[in-house]
Image (tube, rainbow, N blue to C red; front, side):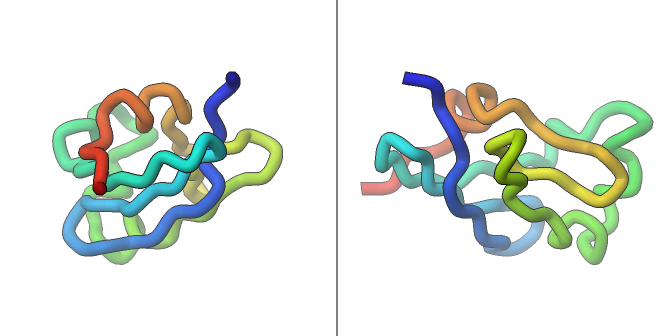
Length: 81
């Protein structure tokens, strides 16, 4: 199965709640993942929390073109019961 992000919500700080197409639900803290020029603006909470789920890329994206692969998010998230 190819993993897709179906829903995402901002929790606080650099934490995002995620729901995937296989039903998995979890949270991920991306604070330590914001390396590189494209992620620099996202270190500002006001910019970070403006992500959306892109229906074509099937992951979270930001206006500046930053995104994370859904497989990366899936592997790194803390699964919620």
